[in-house]
Length: 434
Ligand code: URA
Image (cartoon, rainbow, N blue to C red; front, side, top):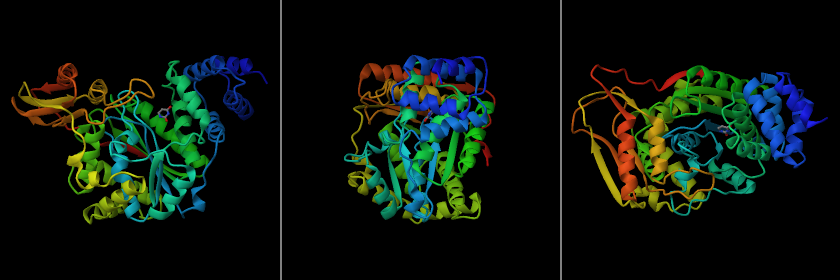
């Protein structure tokens, strides 16, 4: 087999066989296939697509490029949740302890933020001492002992995806539905959970900006999950405006802790309870997602979810003083509230602009490996549809640099749009794919 023939076949819109896909992934991982040929194939896939069969074969080839955990040997059933990424999306921080407190183990490998989209590990690492580099043995031990673990992806899991993703990032080939689906599902399969909830975000602050593409991606991932015998459900959720109010690592951590204590913004709490409900149903701990949601709400109001978060942070070396007193976390030096310059109904609170503002302030990464400032970010005080009056608090910026503060203020003002006429609030969800 020759790599050039595989590239030509895909360039001419052909369907690759399982052997050809395995040949590509194995050769690329062991260094026999160079980056330029892998880039050419990635571009041909982006332009011509893949069938579900090809995408499943690619997913499995990438999953098999490293270790595949089998968590069924550790706990009766473990559940995982994956968000395709968004702004203000601190859902895992609430959902994982809530579901674990209901008796369903959650074993999760999370990522870091890149570009406008935030990452769960960065939010957790705002807690001094928190470790997100657990070994596989530590992961398994903690899942067994306290039923909750969130760590960084081990280098042994789906290494082909790590290599291919870095290449796609610099060759304009990230935005391909089969490549995104296989990238996400290969990691989920390798991480070993038997049930997976996929939270596919839709909107200007997400990878998928329109509902049709998001639906195609969600359907493809659910299909792959089923083909490999993982119970998989996808929800399509809104990412046109930030989820909750906080965007920025420490700010989001505080909002998640607040929510675990029964407070927090309504939209974020509702999203977390709904996602927890689906996970509990997927794991067989609730008859359906509505009963699951009720269980989740009970675990939140009894304080058990918060207690489990406490145990989890302690188990991973984090100083729990900051869980009990998040107000002790380091703060940004300059904090400024900006008020609404107009009367009207909010027609837009652009999630992407808010995410980019957090990056501009130093809270995110332009490039992999950039050092981030946990303290900076934005709190948005209103949602689309809210009526605001001149002088009402619109957003608050947390910065450590005067010039960036000014830029952030301008960017966040531009992220808001007003209408004279009433505006319908945005829905939280657009549908579920079973
Ligand atoms: N997230 C992933 O893990 N992979 C992609 O390709 C896109 C988003």
